[in-house]
Amino acid sequence: MTQRTDTPPTWDERAQLTTFLDYARDTARAKCEGVSAEDARRAPLPGSPLMTLCGLISHLRWVEYYWFQVMFLGEEIEGPLAEATDDDPDPEMRTAVDVPLARLLAEYEEQSERYRRLVAECELDVEARRPIGDGRRVDLRWVILHLIEETSRHNGHLDVVRELVDGRTGA
Image 1 (cartoon, rainbow, N blue to C red):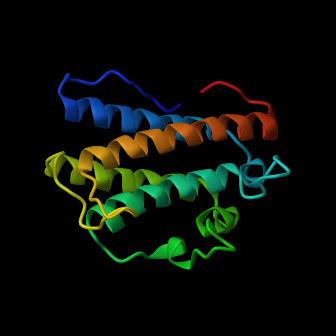
Image 2 (cartoon, rainbow, N blue to C red):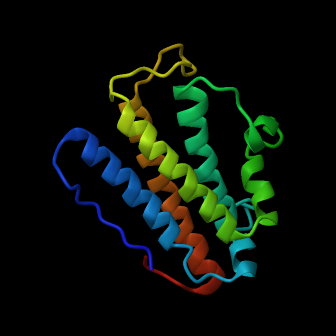
């Protein structure tokens, strides 16, 4: 069972931000524990055919990649996000049903560890190398806050999908 806490080891800003991001990540993983391979790929919401447990975990993984590597570090976009189009804006969710959930979770955790090191090495006021849509450059603090919000919002989706595919609630 995934262990998680929202209480930081110290009360400085960095510890609070990173603890909440890890708590949200751990919650996403906890919501996937014990689900069958078949149920992890099911899309129970008729109006949301990409809304699967696999799709949501893949989306969370690639959203972090986008904000840390593409926007903050300024790297070129790779992976399924490079294939996004107006007709297929979330290819990371569509293609995830072909990948075992255990692999998606392992990749998400491996990447999270890499980003923990990145965050530990940078000041929170460091600006992203790429500007957002309005031309401004967000700082690392904003990226972390945005990922807390994004991950927490999708944890609600994971709740709903999990309950619909196999009846499990909580986590």
